Length: 169
Image (spheres, rainbow, N blue to C red):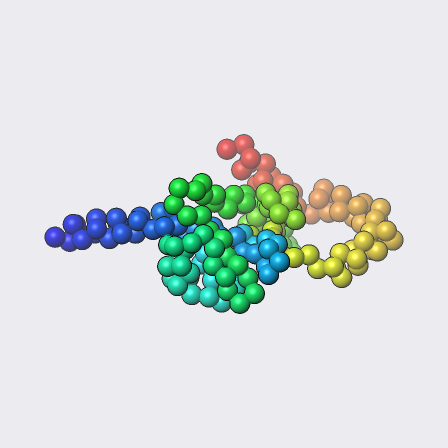
């Protein structure tokens, strides 16, 4: 009897409208219809403070759900589903080597970030302007220092070797 109940639970779990996924990818748009984020439902629920079970029920009947100032889009049955395909890489964080993500799309394409949601975060205009000024003033010096660090720093050398070995697999 227990085995039968287990299979019934499995069937109920996979008769989900969101393409048989426990934690599907959804796209978050602002009021003007501009995409802001592409994250898993659980991560979006935590970030934008909504009940994922309530939203999941809404998605049974429609492909979009409007909340206060955002709109959520998710695939419905029959549509292709995409997973977040950000690749994990090794990167330096201070003196230690940690796992980070390389963005494969969004405004930060090919950049290494600590959280997947940063790939679709809005740019900070003030930081962008400050970096532009700093690079104009000290660009060559920054490049020399970065080259030296990558050649000499043990954490940088370790990072380079670990990323090279994971690429070969």
